[in-house]
Amino acid sequence: MQDRDGPLRVVVTGASSGLGEAIAREYARRCGQRGRDLVLGVAARRAAALDALAVTLETGAGAAPARVRVVPMVLDVRDRDALAAAARDFVGAHGAPDVVIANAGVSVGTLTGEPGDEAAFEEVVATNLCAMHDTFAGFLPAMRAAGAGTLVGIASVAGFRGLPGAGAYSASKAGAIAYLESLRVELHHSPVAVVTIAPGYVRTPMTDGNPYRMPFLIDADAFARRALDAIERRRRFVVIPWQMGVVGTILRMLPRPLYDALFARAPRKPRRSAAAER
Image 1 (cartoon, rainbow, N blue to C red):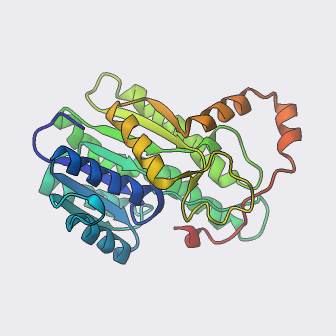
Image 2: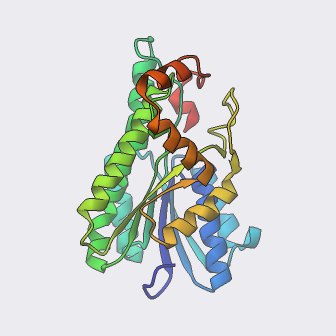
């Protein structure tokens, strides 16, 4: 946990389900075990899901502590003004956060030149990459002024190489990895750390529809435990699970002709509305 006095202050986007919800629950569990209060900002579009999460955590259900204050932020992360307003409100009421986790993301299959996929491509990149910048931008000045904090971006091993049928997703996650590295170097001499987490396959609603084998698949709760370990240690870059890190390293080393031959016929994620994934 962070060293600042008072409650731990954490903000998580995409917190209504999947990885974001699991991360929020894990923070509540750890603060309960350690006897520390938690102020938890949770952002997502679905108000009902955020309200249900707040009730669960604030009432202590699921081994969470009673000393959790959940701050719902009902918004679309593609709305820059809404993100900025939510950041101002949170900082004004609770102070600078100790940890901000840009987790919101969508994953849909896209094909270049396929009618209708232009909008899906734009939405995936806007959600997975542009919104990461906008999430951090609203909180970073307050964190620098407070002299502490950690910015966490959820990338993906899909950003290591371009996957067929997933051009938007691979591009957005490759961009996220590069952006987070740039930000980490920019903030090298500041008190704010940057952590990049690249999940492999995690069992969530986003992966439930994948029509192919997912090696080293793990549950969201297991991912969240390992992710918080990495955040607390302020690790610069981590792949979860580690086995997918090995796979990703091998893939990056493959010569392009060999990679092309191996993946040209790889199974592809189904094409459907990106809005359905959010």
